[in-house]
Amino acid sequence: MEQEYDPNAYDRPSVAVDCVAIGIVDGQPAVLLIRRDQPPFAGHWALPGGFVAIDESLEAAAVRVLRKKARIGAMPVEQVHSFGTVDRDPRMRIIAIAYRALLSPVRIAALRLTVDQCLARIGSDGRLYRDGQPIALAFDHGAIVAHTLARLRSTIDDAAFALVPERFTLRELQQVHEAVLDQSLNKPAFRRRMLERGGLRGTGDFEGGRAFRPAELYVQRPKD
Image (cartoon, rainbow, N blue to C red; front, side, top):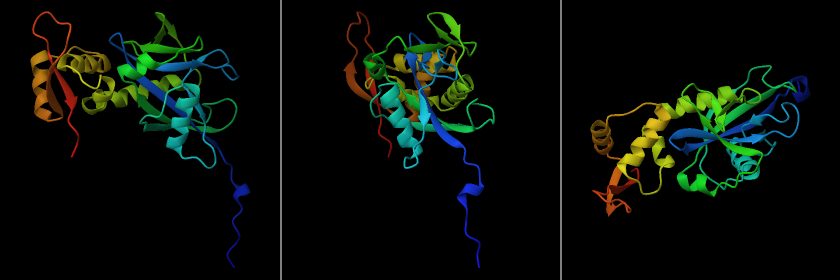
C-alpha cells in the first residue's frame, strides 16, 4: 500500500513578487521605489513587493502589487528572474520572483508620487540616485534592478516601443535606446536599422512645434 503523502514533512518557503517598474526620465532609466514603513529595513527604499497568496498566480500577484503599492493600473508585466539566496531576507526563507513593468511617458506623467515614493535614476555606474544622491536598496533589490536592466538592454529593440509615446519620432526612439544602453548611437545607422526591421509604420503625420523640418511620427507595426 502506498504511503500517504504528508505535506508537513517538508519545509515550505514563502514566495513573493518584487516589481521593477522602469521608464525613462530626463534621458535616464528610472525605477519606481517605495519607502518601507515596517522592519526589516524600515525607512529604506525598496521595490514594490508582496507575498503571493495561496490561490493567486505569480502574474496576478505582480499586477496586484503594482496596483496597491505603486498605484499603477493594470498593465503588462513580464517575469524576469527568480532570486532565492538563502539569507536574502532576515525574517525567513523567502523566494522572490521579479517582474518587469515598462512605464510609457503617459504612465510616468500619471504617477501620483507621495513622500514615500520616488523615481530613482539609474546612473552610468549602476547605482540608484534620488535627488542626485546615491541610495542603497533594502534586501537584494539592487541586484534585482541590475538584472532587470541587463535583461532590458538585451531586448531593447522590441521593448523600446513600450517606453515611447504611442506615436513617436525616430529621434525619440533613438533616445530611449541610448538611455537604456547608456551609449550614443549613430543616427543614420540607427534609423536605417529600425526601418529595415519592419517593425515601424509611418503615420504620414509630423510632430508639431518645430520651426524646421518636423519629423514624421511613427507607430509600432502590429506583429503578425
